[in-house]
Structure formats: C-alpha cells, structure tokens
Image 1 (cartoon, one colour):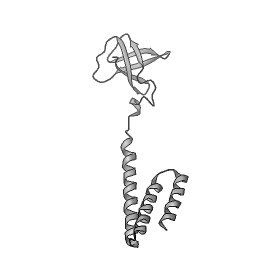
Image 2 (cartoon, rainbow, N blue to C red):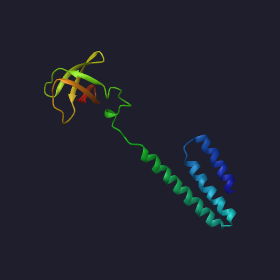
Image 3 (spheres, helix red, strand yellow):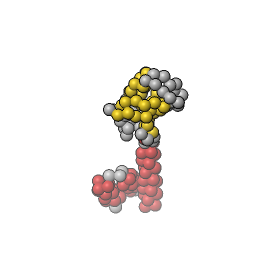
Image 4 (cartoon, rainbow, N blue to C red):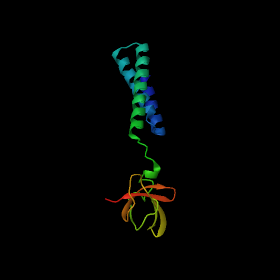
Length: 136
C-alpha cells in the first residue's frame, strides 16, 4: 500500500511540479520501510505523517530562506538604469537636470551625498527621477 501511494504521489508530482507531493511521498516511503521491518500499522501512519510534515516544513523554510526581497527601486534586475553613470554640471537644492539616454532627466542626490559637478552613478529610480551617488 505504501509503495503504491508513493508511486501515485510521484506521478502527481510530475504533473504539478511543486515538490510538496514529493515530500509526502517521502513519508510514504518511510512508512513502507517500517512495514518491511515489521512495524505496526499505527507506527507506519505516525511515521508517514511525521516524515511528511518535517519534509514539507523543511521545504517551506528552504524556499523562503533563499528569496530575499529587494526594493524594485534599487533592483538592477528590474531597472536596467541602475549602475549607469552620467555627468552632472550643476546642482540646485539637491536636484539637477542631466542628459541620459538622449533625453533630459531629473536627478536627485542619494541621502548623505554632497552636490558637486562631476560623474555620478544611478543607484535607484524613483518615478521618473534618477537617484544618484558619486561615482567611484
């Protein structure tokens, strides 16, 4: 019974691709091994439930641990302008206009930066305004 259930869960996993049915199948395999060792039906069910629950919990933790949320304003995978450099001639109250990609853009300084003429690097995009810091 446990081996048939594990096989059916594996087939279901191939259809869905979520890995959760695979974790439940691991519980069925563990219960099947206990059955081969001569364990009682209650122990088989308990082990199947515990192994499946621990495997699903581990999968959830592993999936949540590797996803680190990056604010889209600062994510270079979303905004390809982040990391680009541009030259700024003058500032007025922490805001400037600069030619970038063939058009004039509003530019503001990142917090902690001092306004001066020179080369700056885009660190964020806030609406249609580039946020820059001094280029290194």
